[in-house]
Image 1 (cartoon, rainbow, N blue to C red):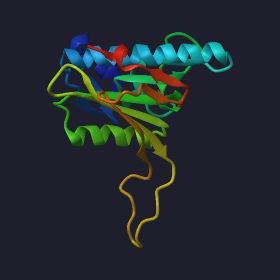
Image 2: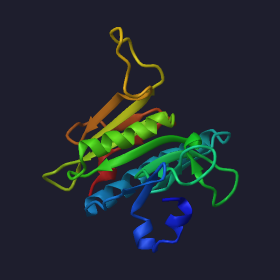
Image 3: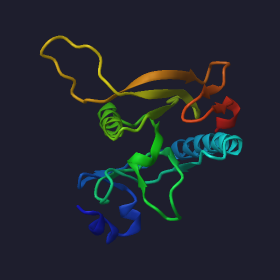
Length: 203
């Protein structure tokens, strides 16, 4: 399917689709907790981004949720829709967000998400060169975030035995992790200082 064909679909159907090099990928809507925690985390990161921009006006960030990220410099038939993202300010209003402008993407993972789906999407972000990737795992037993993980893009793969090549030339490595039961707040310095107390993420 092309972007032009996608635009001709009813909005309630089109908004449930990603295009991976023209291939239709259906997005499952998560439970209410998924939407709530996506919004809470996006708002918290946006607060930190605004503080960073006010301290360093030469830097300009935008924090969004459920926004299409298009791969490549042109075309729209290859895109994903992360749950939340940080990108550079664009030249004007209503511009497409290209992967080259994105600094951080994140996914809120509900108990129903499969590992293969998660790995496939993460590999797409890595192949696009997006430097930071966050995973937010929801607690299956209560309405709460169980774990937040921050990954950094590994630009060169490590040493492997002779004759072995990595499946993907780029990959994410776990850079930090926070659990709901920890006393420490979520603190991470990239792409700008992020400080999020756990009570700000409560359901």
